[in-house]
Image (cartoon, rainbow, N blue to C red; front, side):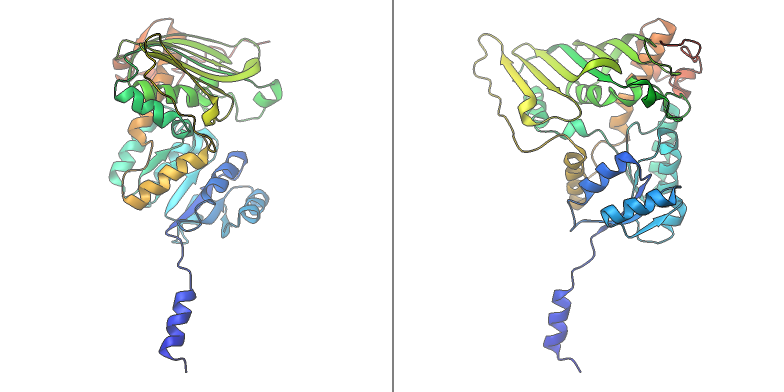
Length: 377
């Protein structure tokens, strides 16, 4: 028979299970970034399931990240009763349906970009969230990198003066074999080209800092790759503040760069990196007479899935809404749709117009398939 002291000692030695059981759906490349980030929170997060149609890939993923079990479907994973959050890392076409399935089960959702293929799907997802006890958080990790919060504060308190001119470039390089993967470059599977799937990270940060946009004039084309979507787009965007910015998204640029330049009345703020930035990647140039402005370099961290999950875990612990909810993602997705609509129709597009529905709400190319017959090479 154990004494009371023995029982108490045994109880004290038992480590309670982490609060949030996470199932990762889709165990391909990007899932590893999520698993690595979530593994940084062993007291709050437990990886309970890896879900993939490819059983061998799911098994390898589970072994690498010490995931509790594997499953062939989200339904099977949820049947275990220990899933608090579903992280969706599948190709874009399945993001919306999987997220709705999780919400209908009362489970929280984290979705890789883009959250859905279309504005219509995004609104359907928002309706599902309203009916559910679960919440949705969209991965836009550049909002959480070192320096972003400092710039946000300087912007919000008026220290920099009015925003005036912006440059937002995603100049990346992807060779033809990249596009030859069956699900890439298809409107009904990937949702678009570099505007939808690559540059969205950079201009999401721009929108997060500069607020709502009002109208867009854009060009897009297929210049060098065999694909059904664009491989380049360029847009001029006007904001509610009156500021204007150019946004370029390219997958044919040999010297790769992700570049953001924001000209305010009292300073120019620049950020140049590739797939993630540190505090040292910022450049701050005060205007003449604005020597009172200060910029502090923040070392040691990087814009990454980890930086967003830090905010996600903090929100869960504090009982506040998770970062980058669907309302935030909607502003960015509306800009994606407006860039495509402007480029395809060869007309300027307002945010009010894109909110009125129509073909471009249902699919980003408005079902026009404008580059389907071009060779791009």
